[in-house]
Length: 343
Image (cartoon, rainbow, N blue to C red; front, side, top):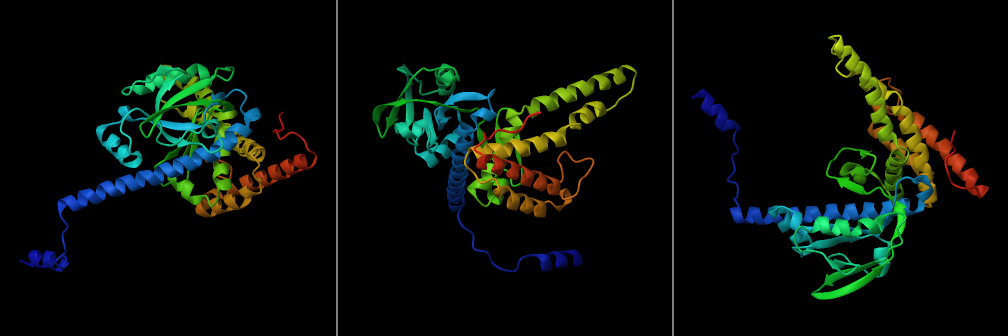
């Protein structure tokens, strides 16, 4: 009786107005579509900013270049039924290779390609309407090689009409940029691509600050840091294997220690080379000062150096970037080439 009284006392005392189940489902669908629209708008924005870095930083990524068209596409037929319904709600198109974004200032943009155009052929070869990804990717493979000079005639369908567009691709660094649906303040590179979280996207206060984040990750890729870290880990793991042969479980200690030996130096180098990506794209590298101070405020544990940390302190990074800015400014004054100093 007493327990019942307590439970009753803790319960709501108002008669809540209840919507119908259909109203809830309808609102869920609206929210899903609108959230996806915002996500895709932000993703497209990142692609536009990255394009400036990819096309102006060719001397910084000599081993990672492709001929790029400047579009983003999606194979609607490869999506699940739920995702297809979602993207149909966003784009109003339900099948085939759909152009979801045309990068500002790209060859595709100059040729007149538009969002929601549906690709029907590449150089006269028809692209199937289902299971389109393999055929479309294969048709572009030779065209994308940096040494190629092959032309591209793209057949598209727009508002029920078939059109052909002549697109002349340009060389660019080969690093695509993806927006990750995650609220943390983070960005990452895997040697091939770059990932920026939604939290970092919202934290950046300007296009230049977003480009600062992207440029740092580009530098990780073009400097081969991921491959070097992996190589260091494998080298250290040899000692873990030897220890295991003697019955000692090191739990991967040697591999982890070896991988971390140069991690801070790799971060310093990515900061430094990233500044040159920015400078070559025409960004005033002084922008990093305020950005890194705000990052320090958000992550005060990183202000001082920690032995176990994989990154230098935010104070050191700020000072290093300020020195790099000075170096770049001197080169601009002397009309010197904007390339990092090498050992």
